[in-house]
Length: 132
Image (cartoon, rainbow, N blue to C red; front, side, top):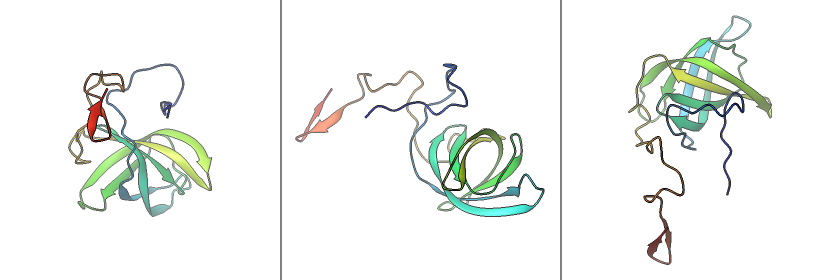
């Protein structure tokens, strides 16, 4: 299955870290575009070492600050909105970047920057044996 990168533009800019498609439950708090406080439970669409992509019903503005709480670990991280994407079913894709780098926040090991499905370490298990 082909995977297209999710970026603010199709300029071909390289990401600082690999994106992993993973759903992690979150609670987000902040101030919406109308200046009203909001709290919303959602989950990530994708994560990377620098933040996440989420679906959010609250309307936020680029650059605004939100508090992101990882529901399973109860850890909280301040983020700022770096990307506002398309709206799907009343929720917008919102890219969040950690204000202070926390690569271990998600509790996952991210692939190295030069990793691709064609990398020698990328193997699939077929019939009980590893194939390239």
